[in-house]
Length: 209
Image 1 (cartoon, rainbow, N blue to C red):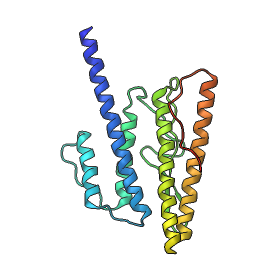
Image 2: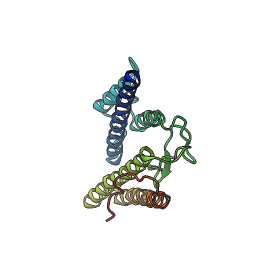
Image 3: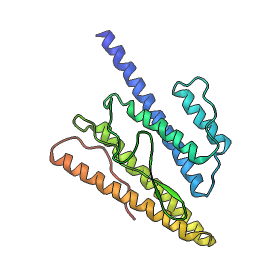
């Protein structure tokens, strides 16, 4: 009994650590996206050091500083986040998102060669969907909402300054479409699970405007 209790505590501590690292990686992705919305292309030293620190907490003893470009830094953090999600003990072999190679985001060209990452909901586990998966669904929808908020604020600033407002508005429209599609898909998932009497994740998507 004592051995089992110790194992349970160790498992809980590891899962808490995994979730904390996921939240940290998500925050770093938000930082990268904010910089890219401001038309930056180079990763500042502070961001590169934060990404390196995340790698060290994941077990790499002496990782090099991440690449200097925001595009490369984004791909590195995203790959780290995918590994953390794959480490969920309830989902030892998660499915890949449709149309997405392992560890790669879905990118779309908005206009003028401006790329925007489209989020997709995490695939359901091979077993019965559970609260852990639904929490990831809610977190993905919430992140899409925040990404649209960043893009919307950037578009408002671009319009007031009359600088590349058409491009900023196109990015904002793409971000909104991505959020809206994910929020509707998440609502359909909850409705189906509620009809089957299965557990639902707490909360829901942010309100529409």
